[in-house]
Length: 190
Ligand SMILES: [Zn+2]
Ligand SMILES: [Zn+2]
Image (tube, rainbow, N blue to C red; front, side, top):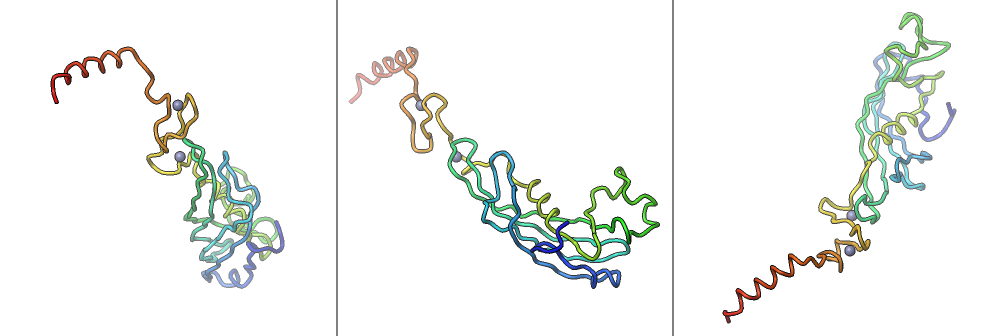
């Protein structure tokens, strides 16, 4: 675990008295936040806004994580931008030396009830893994540029949002016959 950085929070004062709460806002860059072509832009910050509250053996973090993302419309390929705002409700638990001995009897038991908690090491708490997990879970898997995007023509690749392409209405003899009928019906009218 890093010893400093925008997401590393000193938690000694918080943990001194159980039940202490503190609001923390942190923001910074997190590398490699990407999933199937949707990514948090390289220069963009992820923001964490949580209230930390201590309890015996751990710290609870409740609040939200937000980050901008960019991707391509799954239908037409145009760039799409968005923002995820993810509610978080996570625990940090003391691991290793300093762990509360009677918490589970086996603090590192992988299948224990605390396997999804984040580690609290020494007096430092790192919000980055929490922020990373929250954003990755929330990035859209198939973003679209707008709800009614028509996408690209599968034949010629034209963007159907800017109008029908040449192959949009294939010449079909049946249609031609209908057109002929229609012309015939309308023939006698002004
Ligand atoms: Zn689109
Ligand atoms: Zn086409």
